Length: 131
Ligand SMILES: [Zn+2]
Figure 1 (cartoon, rainbow, N blue to C red):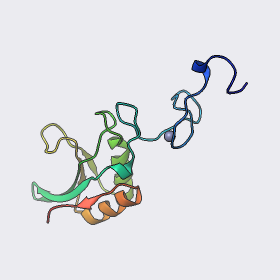
Figure 2 (figure 1 turned 90 degrees about the horizontal axis):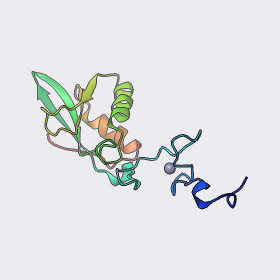
Figure 3 (figure 1 turned 45 degrees about the vertical axis):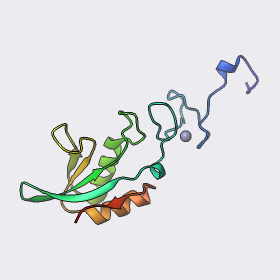
Figure 4 (figure 1 turned 180 degrees about the vertical axis):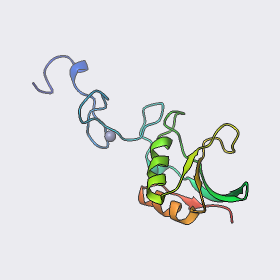
């Protein structure tokens, strides 16, 4: 079994970044973030803005400006939210259509600076915004 067996369609298509197969059915497949067009959309291409806001008398931290994997961008917001919640030991959720901006992640408490730090560690070009 080799690259030259069979037709071109039988050759695995591999990721240009991690060189793993793109086929999600493969055991060790590529999990690089991709947009709806299939192009790589890496954290380093994204510039999320992190600000804090008082809602119903409580501080929360809002992360906006992320692309969403489901919406065509490259960030899995649910996975990112989970990672941040675990890392900060706080609650939070995805913004709903009532929130602005609707693609934001919302964490409970004022964690702006540490969130910027964590996002930068993950490779995002995050910036603090607001006061
Ligand atoms: Zn990859």
